[in-house]
Image (cartoon, rainbow, N blue to C red; front, side):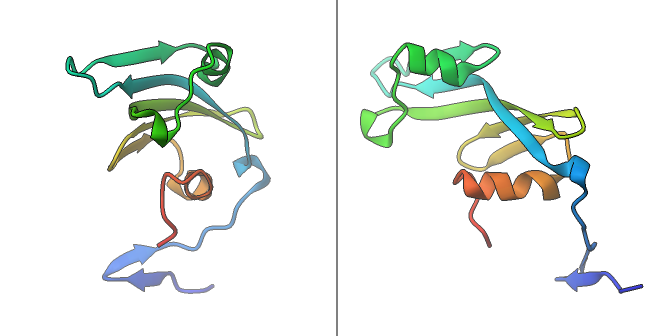
Length: 116
């Protein structure tokens, strides 16, 4: 059996992905949007699929639009039917109730994390 790797004094366990660890769907369920106006306004959208709501309302989240995301909540569905909750509060806070080794590649792919 291979010894676990050490990195700066902390133990890094080897991890092998299982078929049940596959993310099948990630759904935005809530988003808080800062408008950066003189009133420091924030718009909150909540729903079973907030991406659909934003698209139907023709709401753009591009950086050029002068808005920023204060908070985003996602429902992460796994191949075996498990569901996990992910909350991101830019720029530095994330809360995930599942295995971080599974969600990390998705976060990197979506630009929430850098691959360091």
